[in-house]
Length: 187
Image: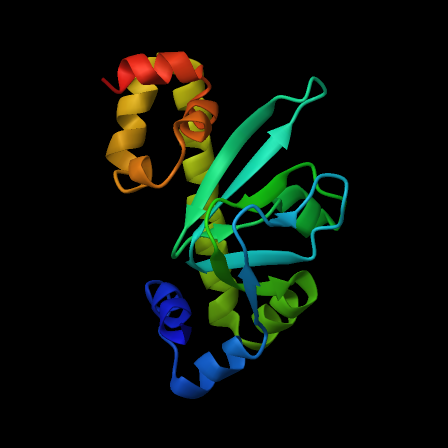
């Protein structure tokens, strides 16, 4: 399990064994069951999570009760409610487990201490945040400019393994289409 986190970090910055142990000391391990929430709207967001196994989703529930999925997170991905976590505010999003999951998680305080003491980790987190912002920009542009079939084909291209792990109702929500439209597209 530790190797997954180390490999994630070392894709961007090299670490000695002692540096990795120092990094690891700032994280805790979380084990979660299918359907368990790790973040809930209107509650504090104490952690950012690195997914070691399982599958999670972040979503927003609007005033009419409709869910809007922003992100899926699988092994080797990071997930949190960024606004709540970094601004130390209550969550605007929910994050729950589609499958049983295991994560490494870190508090904002521990993240800041880690970055202050090991500069290369600040660079690592900056690179991850930049990649996340680019992905979010691409997702927004896709929702604004592509039709439902194009969004579905893009989903299949980007996440070929997820199509068999996620219920079709959740994929439809992520794509911003009805379940019926998704059924038509997937045949």
